[in-house]
Image 1 (spheres, rainbow, N blue to C red):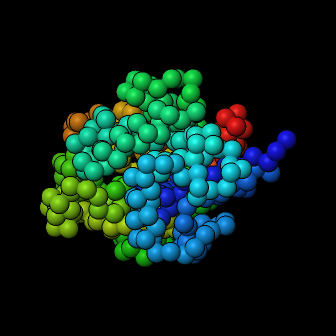
Image 2: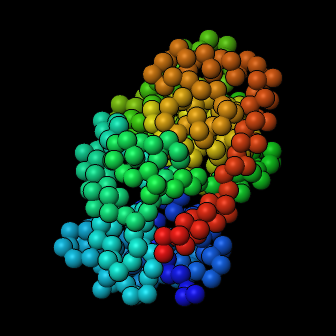
Length: 372
């Protein structure tokens, strides 16, 4: 049997982002480890490993801006990119590129449908880009991966995709979240000056994450709870959040602290040091932070919408993300009940074991073999 050649569009590795870059980094790394002789290539114009934080064969170390500019032009080129690639590629997995080689089988990953369901939470440019990708890649693809069953159902309903063409393969959780120790948590608390017990939010500060509701719910807690527990928010600023960012930088309560972007290596300790993780997102295709918090042994409060109940797996307190009262009640319950926290920690650790990058890679390789 000929060697299976899989080329993966690695454009998201070139920019600092959250979920998709995180997925692509761990996914492609584990695909290589589990490849069983298949060749996994990254395309195009990738720089040196130190720049991309990724191991593997890379091409010319152009500047990131130059590569992204060329990709922008490629996406507007009328022909496909066959001339830029070897002819022996069996499968091309697209993430951003819109002109895949015609000689290879085409696949892609569906991460979420927020640009259709909640377009007001994205910039017009992002909405337009996602819709172009759906038209030029998702509709044409020979087979697709969905990161959750909820996302698969959304794709079938909204994009009218053939259900049999989509295979659900969950993300994994990195081992460092499972291995975090109390000493790691103490070191992170010391590094960031977190002297008091805290509630934690981790994610991009953007409309979809529902930060304003979280701030309202925390502000509505009794004074005794706010005096005992801080609210810590970590994540880069996103789109259309000037007012929210102003509230975070000049909070109404001394217990609210915004850390900004936190390095991946500090996240396990930050999660493990929290009394609870609160994630009232309006929509998620998967919800990385929910699984990461559970792996780190932190009780979770999250929304009863989209893929979040599927990923939470009965191991979180689920709330209506439009109700400040519901969120505040869940926070009060978890902060005042050690037995409830212990119950959720146990359930959460067990649930998080469902999310393995090794298993994700193995299922993905079977998917590629079936497609080829």
